[in-house]
Length: 639
Image 1 (cartoon, rainbow, N blue to C red):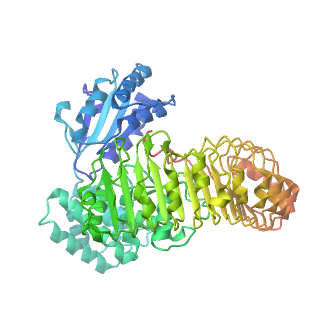
Image 2: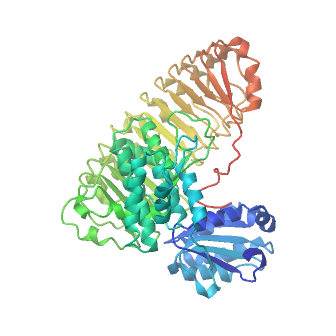
């Protein structure tokens, strides 16, 4: 009613953290009447966060409209381009949702308001009221009945095998949550399936806390108790959860990045099964949101590139607080935020080495890449988050003798050049590298000599011709993941010399048209994923030499006209993913493959059904079309 009937151009939804502001406005964006008034393409949802990057925000608006995204020089350029974009949209009304706007962003908010077209609305969610825009819409905590319903829903298992204890215990817990939806969900999730004694213990802890905390601290007290309870489920589960603080606010966290870190820090299995189980446990506790961008019914063994994690800001604040309680020298993880070139005081004052095993460093677009020294003799995982157009790795990386995992993520819009990437070559114990939206000169990879490196993951990267001598650089590499690297026009021939390689994933690389015949040299390869390589026209005959290959995925490779006859020689093949491969001809030789499961769409399944007579144990699994909206880019937050 406020959006449709009010004369105000700006409507502020105000409430403390954890009251459901973001949930409410996301539902509003999906409302049929709202979509009818503004149209899907004119509903924009942007997360500001505590330190918004106006350049990236404006670039994502261009991306949402499928217009060419401009390279922006600075904040003033971004504001000018914002005005041009809003003018270009024309007279059509716009609904611009600005989520999680902080007080310090008032001037930036004013820029959006003054350039807003006629008949358009800005909907702001904030912990502040912004009185200059008139009385806010104050979102109240839940009343008692609604709080009981939400808590009960969160505390009962989906299969109905859980229970709620006596009414008095439940009433005490719900009262302690003070009507905060986030607290009700998290506390309810932490008690799901627990014995009566645990419920009563939690009720006692929370009821004592309510008498000494104000309303905001009541929420933190409830959430903290649920985080502490993780130790009772699994010894490492709380530690895994606290590691989420290594990633920036309001950004999706790739599950594969967490799996890489946890696999090395906690000595979990190489395929990530136990690490993924931890994510599911934390999701069941409502401590994070685990989102799959693919079909959740069909899961490939050890492939989690389509799984992402998001978390509530307040939970993240608690994680950061929990990680900083001990003295710096004794902390298990160090989390540093550098605004401009202002380093944390504890960093500048460091006089002795730390015992930290994980280090996370986040910098903004103003950072000059001038690094201060720090002693990190025990760090095994380093996470670097940045937004700069140019970036230098910290010089102290050369002395991280124990480093096993390096995660480098650019949160800007275009790939960032790293000019001193050869520094990585000094990390003799490095086992896993993950780079996202990075441009690395070709010579950088070829100059490295990392004999212990086991996995490389490249997402939206530009590496030039950086893999010509990769077998000399990484002789023991067993896994390569390359995703959305659209600058890659040819399958790197150097990959064919990696005789230890077991998993090779080149997905969503739209310009690759052929595979080299030498791919048959990868005699130890067990998994080959080529999904969504839409220009790939054929598989080479030599693929028949991959006698150890168990999983082959060519889903959405729409240009492949036929499978080679030699595919019948792949005697170990057990699962073949062929979703949306309706134009692909199937050779009769494929009938030699015993115990084969084909996972595909209905139309492709009909082709396979015609060959069932040639098979002894063919299994056809039809993948149902996934109708949810999880595919939407989480880091651009648009509808």
